[in-house]
Image (cartoon, rainbow, N blue to C red; front, side, top):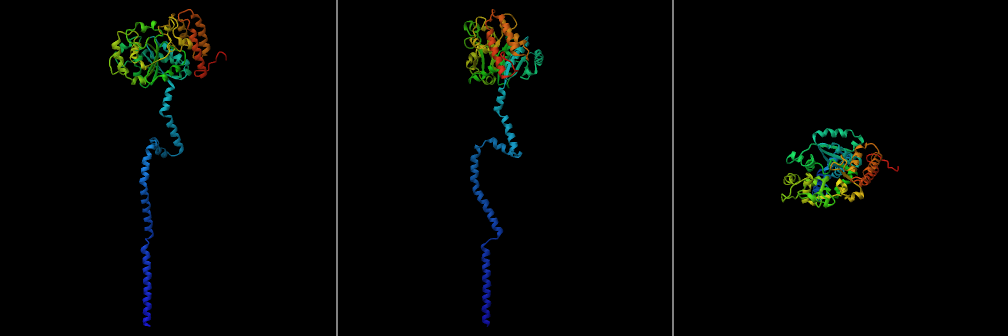
Length: 441
């Protein structure tokens, strides 16, 4: 019996031992729950780190292809939030792009004139003729003696609001950046040499049309402004020939200095790309390496001052004699002067297409030597801005021209009338200044 009990006790103890051994073995094979979670957490991050270098390398290769502007602006837009903010910002950036600024610049034409002495009335009449027919807005740069400034402002203030809203103007003192100012001022007509310094003074202006005070526009300024687009890569200014026939031209017969081409050029109407002029180096007879525009003027004057007759115009002829590739030549109808008809009509383009710009040099607006020129000047001066162009300008010209037929240049009234009528119809079609009723309406 005792032996039987001992066997049972030993069996029970052995069974308990086996159970304890079994449970301890399972516990050693499986970690606790928290440790499993922690281990999986580390495994997930180590997996990401293994993949991340490939993604980073791919992003480094792709980023240069993205527009830098978008990369900079995305955080700024997202910080403000909302699709509306992004749309407004894009709209604003479109308005401020360089392309838009160029368009705005092209919408305004720049016109310069120099007025000294008794040139006030001529200048006001020139401005009036430009405004009567032009389409785009014009910015006038008026260089005048101090005592004329107030008179210009008074004259402009008397014009109707419908006219004054179509142009801007600035009045500048007479200044010369190099040399003796008094010497430059007296070079030819009072202050005329000022035009040589326009590229130096008007540094913020890209392109400009310069005209003498005795110029009248018989068609829109817009039309001559278009010549700027006709310039090739080397051209930076445009003028008309001084004469059409060499044997009766002044330069070809009398000049004692170099001049452009066969007959020289007339500077009373001069279209300029100021940006190109400021950046160019000009060949000359003094320095082989070339000179900038500002550095060229005074030495050139010093060399030729005893040989020039027409002042600044002669200096321009000398400059373009040595740099002919820089000059664009437009037809004589854009600078029509008494010289084109006093020895017989020699401007064929004007006969065929009409006079575009009338240049009344030699004082012909104020004497009886060229009645046809004076008739046009008086008609524009007397025309009320608000009146019908045909009734108050075209028809009076027709009547007055009948009295000039047998005078010098008397054969050209029909040339004037042809262009003026054409211009009035352009104004009518564009409806710029006001509605002009045509005769047949």
